[in-house]
Length: 303
Image 1 (cartoon, rainbow, N blue to C red):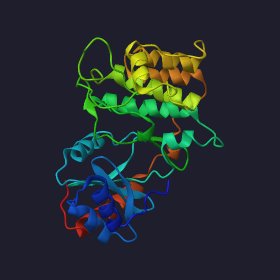
Image 2: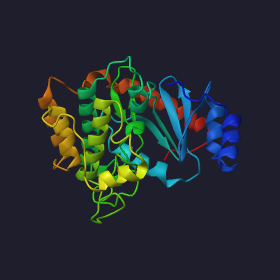
Image 3: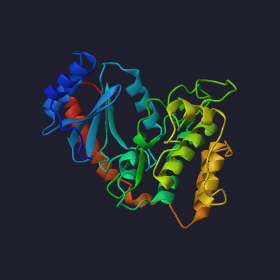
Image 4: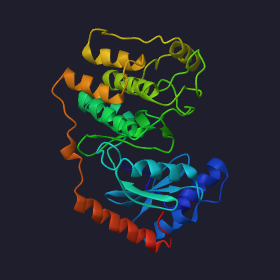
């Protein structure tokens, strides 16, 4: 995943042409100035990701004081021990320094037909990440293949927590087939955030991992929505153990996301393979000190 490798001027030109804006957060330019060989890595809806060094990126709010990034920082601080959630090194005002996960998104990976797919292990790792959120009272709220990255060891990491919700909050963000509307109105557009909405998203991601194409990818948008509204789900092998897990997820069978992990483990010999992704305390501290140094050089204060 090479990233954009843009300069600040290229970013400014893009933002001018794409959204006619010239008022980018000054911190973006400051960090690009003080961090040697840094560049613009990616652009999101509310932030820009800067390549800082081979192991670190900085996620900077496009608008000073943006609450999306601030909210994500609070969520990440409570999830520090899950190796399948992106690791954070340092949080400051309008910026989060995070681990660089450079092997692309799950969406990218599924288009690579010549690479093996560690489907069962990925299912377990993604469920573990969602379960960690649930244990702290959160729902990710936007689990989809673009928010799932793979590291150099092909281990899965869940990212982007700016739309994460407290369990029980209305869910209004997402896109089919990773969310679904229901004919009976309850909560937000896509229901109430919690085990039912999270496991529905997991089921659709598991389907994608297994089949290589998204659920109802062959249908037009309106027809896809109608199928989901009516709870009509295809299964090629209803007696297969993985398809059985997917069906349970789509139908809200599991009381807790942790219960999905147990069903996945029962399918075959698979574990989380945490050791290949776990970062030592010294390594993390070293990266934190580097990030803090650059943050201080940019003339800002810790959040």
